Amino acid sequence: MNNVKTRGIKNSIIALVCFFLFQSTYGQSKIYFDKDWKKTTKEEARFYRVVAKKNDSLFYIRDYFISGVLQMNGHFSNLEQEVMEGKITFYDEKGKITNSANYVNGVLNGPSIVYLKNGKIEYTSEYKNGDIYNGIYKAATVKYLYKNGVTAKRIEFLSPNDYYPLATTVYGKERDTVYWYTSKGKKIGFGTYKGTKTINGLDIKKSWLEVTHTFYKNGKKEGVQNIFYEGKLIVENTFANDVLVLNKSLNPFTGKFVTCKYKNNKPFQGHYFVYHITQDYYDEYVYDTGKITSYNKYKSINRVIKTDSPN
Picture 1 (cartoon, rainbow, N blue to C red):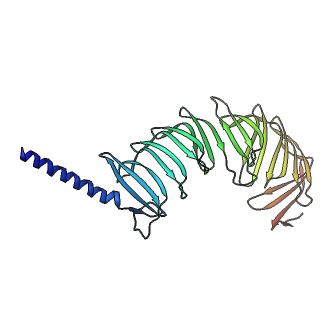
Picture 2: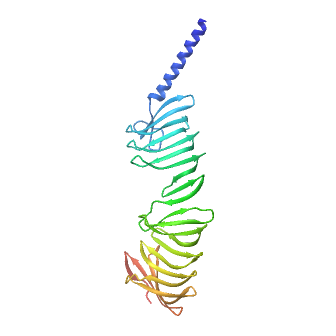
Picture 3: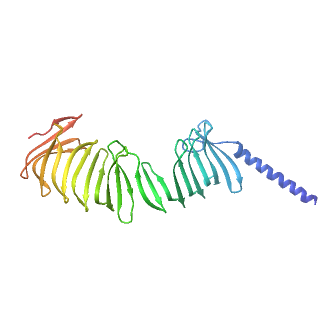
């Protein structure tokens, strides 16, 4: 009986010693990290971690900015591999919550919430086995709305410049609808698509500073096509049943538009300019009954146009 009691006391002492050793290692000391979350010294640290063991399979983790403000808290099931488990919450350097997510064995599962700076919810999502199932997924400049694991809507929310339009694409089974907006949120128009082919309405093709607006009817270009550079209209083409019939282009000398009629989709009578953006020069053509009667090339240097090869 005394031996049993002695063994029990010894076991209790061992367990107690192990507990205090763990507390000394994780509960009291700090693990320091640099800006890339690599272990470092206190002097080089940008973050530090405090660990407390919850049970045999879970560690309670609190990460802090070096200032002492909480950066993250939650549980790891594997401390060395940093396998997240359950709800994990993140904070900014002022201690305000930025987002929270739920993990199972290190994989996103369940609700995920992103917060605005004022503390209100910006959007929520639901994940299954690491993939978004319902709600919003936000990339650098685009938001995606998912329903039952399928993309239902794609929303551009950030424009690289004031001339670049934004698109909201609503996905259907056979046809998709794209709503076009200015960078300020004003609606420009919309078009319907089958795959990448425009069926009806407005289609917008975008580059960094040049934007082309084209209207379609039954899959063919119809009506006026506008081409903008830095937000300024430089070309106006008119189509009839996919055939170009009239071109109006900006004369860079006068600031007024010149006109050229087309026949069989080719220049026939009139005058037009072509601006080559990447090389920064203009071509000027004059046509008479389908033949070129005059051609000039003008080089634009510091916004001043000079004659390069006059005829």
